[in-house]
Image (cartoon, rainbow, N blue to C red; front, side, top):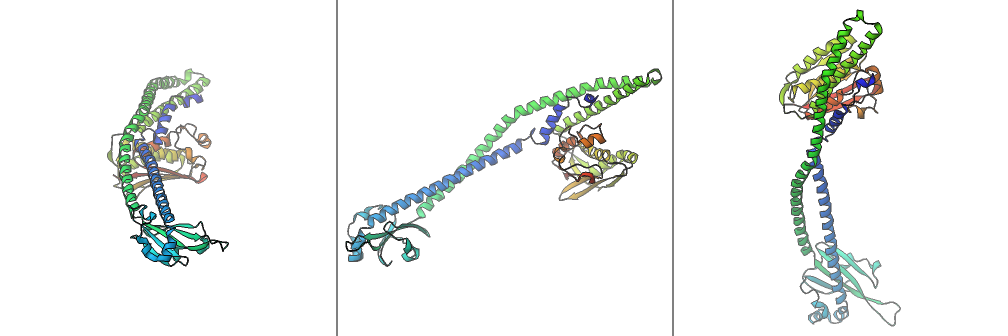
Length: 445
């Protein structure tokens, strides 16, 4: 008769409940936020890469221009050493290079002494302070950023027939202010910022539309599944009721029925009751999956007191010490029926899986603008390996099946869906045989 307790129809609602509990049925906000973050990362990475690529290219272009200028000025070092600064007043070819730019040139002898300079802006650092003599050779040139100036320095050598090695004549340093590059980069940063912001706004509006279009078919499909599940569940009620009535009528006439037949009728009646309970669980879970427009101000104290009174007989029958610690005048905003089912499921689980002589502690307290309702028991507990699966529909551990075979594994699934609808949190802490503690955190009204 095992197939009677796990019919295939409720598996439809299992799918929908798991999708809802994981944010897949109504994921517009989360999906949109993830999409926007991804696009911002892509745009930001592209913008930063472009920015540094342009910086590198502008600096390389400036270095090439300075190197060309300083190499063009190299032949003039000899005449400046002989005739001094007045040689600069003559028309020499290098002086017409880059005439529209604010370059400057400096000539130094081999000891680093300044001989002459031409231009407007010059670096504050003396040549020897930036030069490493050990690196100087015929192929020597050095690029440097000195404050707001970009410089290039080369060494000038002459060949002497009487010496084996060329003679160092001096150095030439060309410089240019980087203010123009900084102005270009400032405009670039402004352009990238405005362009990126505009792109994000446009992507945001576009993603809202695309998200809606993407999720609509999914929602329609899940709504159809829910409708089918509701219809099937409703239609199951009638034949199950008929089976129960028929078996009860037959059982009322036990004296006319063989003992073996009575046993079979009891099995049928028990299975029919289990199926009816399963149908009720499925219908409630379907309704729990659908966002409720009911958002009334619910007083928790009378709601929980009523539940305690309902479960006290079961606790006494099993010899379980049921203790409570509730606070008055605590209100949450939500659906009174769903909240009642939520805490009823938690209390029922705690009592079902706690052995005689055990204890169940039901408490309520305030913390940081929220109310925390705790259900602690000294029952069989949950192993760390099983904790990730406890909110899955129809999942039950082997130990739970052996202790309470009539269960369906929908209690915590329903509880999770209700908590999610009320913008709350539910956590489970268990240490095996030491018992289980379930905490529900809900925002105050």
